[in-house]
Image (cartoon, rainbow, N blue to C red; front, side, top):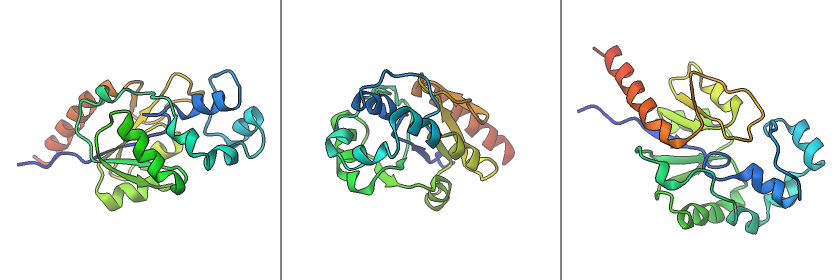
Length: 181
């Protein structure tokens, strides 16, 4: 019996609407922007914009849902997310309150290393440099592009909705099966 792929999901700007919530916090209208560019974010929100919200538990607990938990129609194993470790309990509570499956939450700023250590085969993430880092590593990156992403998608697998994942996983498993024959 073949083993199921191990799959991990990012949280911010994949499941949770972090960037729109930051806009609301700062009283700014949501626009398309490259929220992974620190210069862009400082120009938009001000220097050290992340500091005031990074330790505000209420900010983390009240993130709007970006992707409804009901859209997850595939098996996955972990949440791998980069956020302040002090907000771990708030993140767990957010996942539970919003109906997301009870899976292990890993805090990581080096997601490639974490995926390799955990034996993760597929990572769904919105950060272009994370997806790029997976190239050639044996970990498939699925680039999640939300409606406010002001950057170009990268990689071979790009989605705008979690209901697109199941088909990609089936295709990827089929390709992997054909390689072992």
